[in-house]
Length: 254
Length: 364
Image (cartoon, rainbow over all chains, first blue to last red; front, side, top):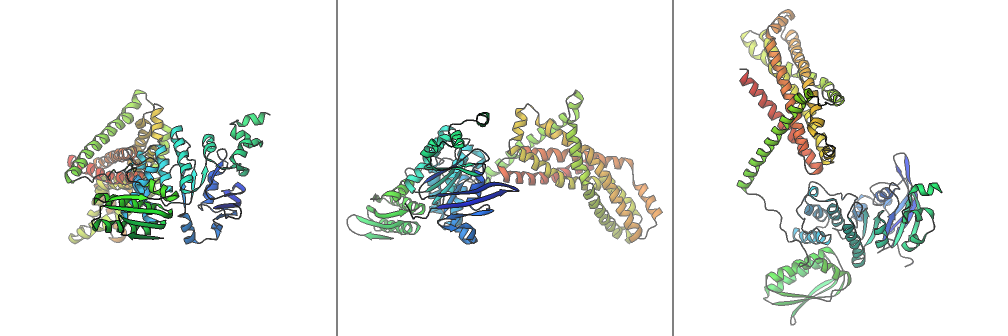
């Protein structure tokens, strides 16, 4: 679809972690309704990239645009309005430990939607049912397993009907059944609601199942950007190594 | 975007445009109208709906629920695409959770819960106290190890770093007490007795008590915060899984360090109080230094000093055991850590005053 403005467009993003430069000019875009997998080994800058894209950290240089608008140019109010249009599910859930699951999901709705408690109640129950936590409404986060916490983080990210969702390591540390369930959920969200999804992961199974396109980072540089099929066929050493799970020593020995 | 009611047979509500919070609201009130009109049946025609959101779907779900309650049969027709997905997602029969919020406990239940909670807690506290006493005062003589490196660190952190605050607070308290006493005793011309009073007061009660209260705020809270964070982050479980005894590993070094440091700090506190009394007596009340020193020496009695130091050792055990108790029992993340720390300081002050009262009764 030529000429359409991508939902998310990142150009030449350079980021520092303290003194160290961790992203050396990363560029990519996410089109409406696609699932983009951001992949790469541990410590390659995936989570840093996410934090810059969602406006928690400011880039040293480069730009991040949502629907064609640069977040650097936005004032507080515009940024806040934009942040209501995307949902973020953090690596360890990011749930508020002092609140029940119910209140965790209800919080963004109470603060931002202006709906009545009755309707918020229905939405909270529906979103928690969607991730299979309908029974756990009144539990505290500390009473949940890691996988449940992650799913609850999902539900909260979806509370305000976002148009683009960021998932940081959705299936890391989960059993294969739950992980597969989450992959299924991501696909379903895209299929039914047309949500754009950016998923940060290093789980091969999950990438192969959900991704349309792949952005591979390697030591802060873009190692690959393109369709999943092309990534699987790529002859590029780093990409091949990742998809065939070859340890680093093997490359060094050659 | 609109919601219209068509009164043909059966009545039909036609939704077009976006099924959103606003249209949903209208839809809900329209279903109420249908129910009030005494109709038994209504159709909701959605073929003109091109988009939807959660709020709209939630209103629809509520509307169906209300209609069912007032005996109106609802048929939803023609929903397509995203709208039908949302409606499906919010279908009341598919929501697994009709679980109500847990009921708030009644008066008797709360009182009972509080009472049994207190009993269980008292048991845990007593258990930890016994355990600590064993691991601190008996086990080392059975050739079980003490982590002397940790004791040394704790002594520096708890003791040496508290010297200034203990000194300053007791100087100020010494002034206050001497002034207060001078105002009263001055009326009968017995100003010089202030020296006795300050000496007895600080050696027997105040030195140890003030030090304990400062230390509960400074060290007791720190102990709780440290152990609570360790518990929350599964460090305590890691220790247990290595076969290490948590009391021996975490509590004992702190008790040994505190039992050594608290009496030492109390001596500083006693000295500070008496020094403040002296300064006030000589410079403010105009009493001869020699007289004041003489009266002070009369007031200083070995058994009072020993009583004060003995009490401070007991306070030390109280502060560490209460601090560790609250730290190890923590639950529920960041907020839990904060609550445990608050509890710990409150319990410290309570138990310290209780021990002081016990000593006062026993020592007559």
